[in-house]
Image (cartoon, rainbow, N blue to C red; front, side, top):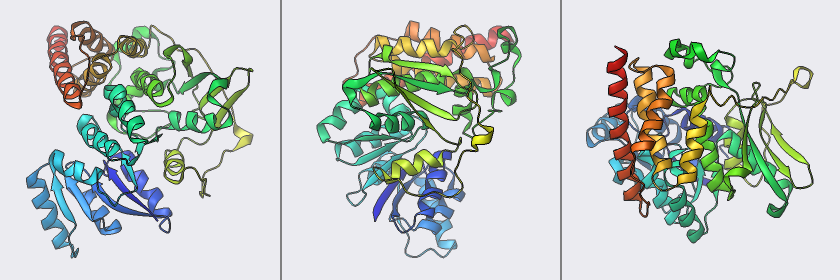
Length: 392
């Protein structure tokens, strides 16, 4: 039985991961859960899966969780930690076989890095791990002999397609993007779009930030950076195309002209199960394509409408602290947009200004990454504040 430690258990990927684990109870057990502040959801998860270790954001939340679990009659109580030490305790638990890194933001980065250093197999759903610290994480994984298994649907698709050939036979990979809710919206109308419109993704049900990132295609820029580190590819070997149906999750082109694509319904439980059971494939009920209704359209990415993809590529080319800065600036800008302090196009403008102002520093330790993240957030708040005042 494979023992799972899950970082970010109350988020979208965390909840779906637990649904997959629950459907395969004979194969998996939950060893540890790490969450933030959603104590109601976490308490229910503890009752269902009875982990040995649990972590929350603060000491006060840990006390509240213990009281809540006692009130539910949970005995014995799991070990309850908090803060950075608590999440690292879950991530590095000697009894855990696989760590699922699904915590949102850089909060999950140090713990995931410690898990890799401890030789744990890691299933990655946290983009910040490779976007902000790709070089450090890749070196640590190689040194520890750890394979990083991607949960993200596009990278899972590439991982599956690469099993069809040897690495020297690879020519390029093609990441697919739905185009989000504004694929057909004229550029001139984007300034007027609302958070509600941007959150109405046509294909996927996700958290707020990743949904906005999909609308700006920032998310696809992050995936280019992740693919560079996950698969050891040069940036010019990673292409992006618009595929509105989200049926082809990504493709691999080999040197002989053959293209291998991974298709499936737009449901994250499919790549989650693939990652948890890898290298085996197991039956899953309810997931099948209706071939009679299948339609596949592909279009180039309109560069002027989606500048965030270009900015992410520029950050990858520059290296150092800039990929980290893209992620941090985007998070601040998206929050400001959701709070109606920025327009939709201003998200890209904030990111661009932060990249222009960000010190060109090499990141040699995780502490350097966290410092760069903090500085980029400070700059992004300045830029967002200036733009917000100018618009009011």
